[in-house]
Image 1 (cartoon, rainbow, N blue to C red):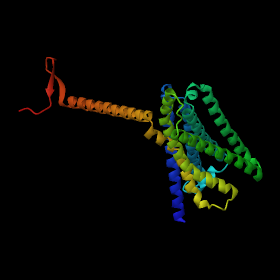
Image 2: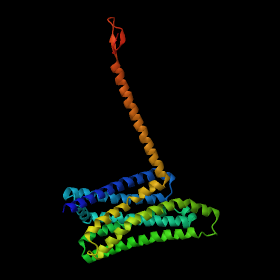
Image 3: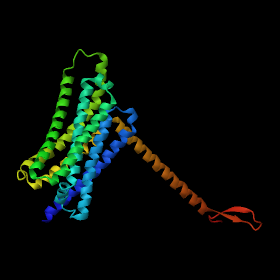
Image 4: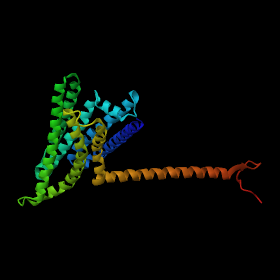
Length: 324
């Protein structure tokens, strides 16, 4: 009994740490992209919205943990999972997690468009990006509303909603795979008919495409087990034991903190901002240290030299050191 409680408490600690890392990492991602937006490509606006969706994942999990700590036993990791799967938290989990996957699919489509048709991509209207982002959030909000309403539906209607949700996620996964497979095939067998300008544009888009491929692939590695387990349990509750779910949930949360980690290692703007913040922090520490040293020096001077007056009233400085 005590071992199960300690194991459950370990899961709570893991969920809390993952939620904090997700929140801090994605806030930093939004800060970097937003401050550097005049110098960035339009694709980064999709990445900002992806970071917002992942930020919702971490915020929802942290809210569930705090709510469980107040109302129930925080040492029980299964209470956290049960609360996250209850009304209305499950709707926010669906909104944040699913929208994150939808944005991964949108990023893949945008990268395929940039590599396969670089000239059209460069001359594309910004409204295309805005409309695409609005469509993704709209789809996520629709499933959010359906999930909220599903608590008043029968079990049969709930299954229809779950099947439609899983179908959209599966379509997103297929879009991601098809987009990068097309990019891979195009790069392995380049067309000799392309002019020099088109090849230069394509090469210019490749570094970002490779970075985003690493980010998307690492995210899907941690997301796929959760998708398979959750979908299987929806059809057959007894096929996968409850004790296996906390491990899958921990992997599912890891999906939302992979993007900031990959960006920090692969994108120069992240390294530049990190260096600037570290440099500013060192400057502030040096200024604080200098202020403390000057303050100590002032105290030492006041202690070593005290003003004194002769009988005629003229001020003198008398040293407090010993006289022979």
